[in-house]
Structure formats: C-alpha cells, structure tokens
Image (cartoon, rainbow, N blue to C red; front, side, top):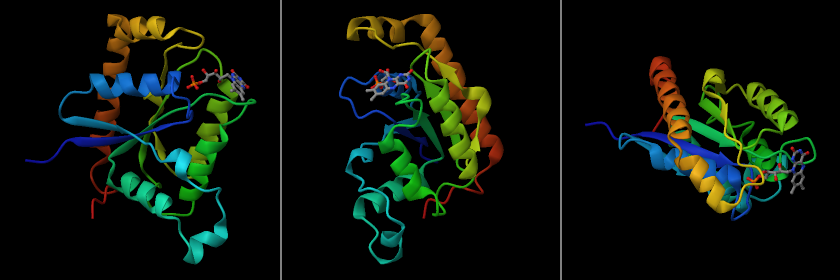
Length: 188
Ligand SMILES: Cc1cc2nc3c(=O)[nH]c(=O)nc-3n(C[C@H](O)[C@H](O)[C@H](O)COP(=O)(O)O)c2cc1C
C-alpha cells in the first residue's frame, strides 16, 4: 500500500505565535490520514545564502531541507509581508534552493493569513514562477488572522466555514498533484 501523500509546509514567520504557522497547523490538523502535512522547522537554521558554499561547502541544514523538499509531493507556503516584501528568512530559503533540482515542477499551494500583504504575495509568486515551481493558483485562499488574539484565531480556524475552505483547497491541491502524475516526485 502506498504511504500518505506528503506535503511540506514553509512558514515565512519564525514567531512562536505566528498566524501563518497557525494557518498551516490548521491545514495539517484537518488533513485526512492519507495526507501528511509537515511544517518545516529548518528555515531559522539556514545560514545566509552564499553561492560559493554551493560548490564545496553545502551546509548540512540546506541538505536536510533539500531532502525534505525532494521527498514531498507538494509544498504549501504561508508568509507574512515584511516591508512590502518577502521575509528575509523565507527568501533566503528559496535562494538556497534556486539552483538545485528539487524545486522545479514541484506543485506549490500558497495560502495567506492576512487581508493585507499583497506586495509580498506578488513578489513570492514571481520568485516561485522564476524557480519553475508548479504554482497551483486555484488553491490560493486567505483567512484573516491578523491582529486576532490566540482565542479569536482558534475560533476562526475551528469555524465550519473556515474548515470547509481549508478542506476544499487541500483536496483541490491533492487532485492537482495527482493529475500531474508521479513523474517529478523522486523519493530516492
Ligand atoms: C518587520 C515587519 C514588517 C512588516 N511589514 C508589513 C508590511 O509591509 N505590510 C503588511 O501588511 N504587514 C506588515 N507587517 C505585519 C505582518 O505582516 C503581520 O503582523 C503578520 O500577521 C505577521 O505574520 P505572523 O503572525 O505569521 O508572524 C510587518 C511586520 C513586521 C514585524
């Protein structure tokens, strides 16, 4: 029997009480047993990208990240906007991946935890397209958690309407991955 479909989730915020992380956790928690959603905890460990290190000094944290990306059937990304752009930690993560072969054609679902931040979303979309990911645009959704207390967030994320949005888009993403076939997922 094949294992679960694996989604690897990148959060652009390293805050302990991040709203974007809360959104990714809600997706993880709502996923049925045949879909595994793992949230990346490596972003804060990566050194600043330096192309020289790609030649003969690849950091172990980058290799660990690359292995996770290779093994994943798809990526989910949720990020805040910082100064009208992509947070440095997430951009740094993408920079380490840009010349590698794990990321091209990887299905990606973007989600967003704010009613603002369109500049960051636009920049992220451009960067991801430049990296030749397969951005599944019709699975994008936003749940506004900006400025909400942890209790308010929990109530929004537990709401049946929110859960339906999460589940519908998760399933649509999984269907899009299935349609693209296994040709680009190398689990070796
Ligand atoms: C340094 C910094 C810069 C920010 N710049 C913007 C911005 O340009 N536009 C915006 O809409 N929000 C901005 N924000 C607000 C964050 O995007 C917002 O608080 C978001 O919910 C944080 O996500 P998190 O809860 O996942 O950490 C900024 C926050 C910080 C800390």
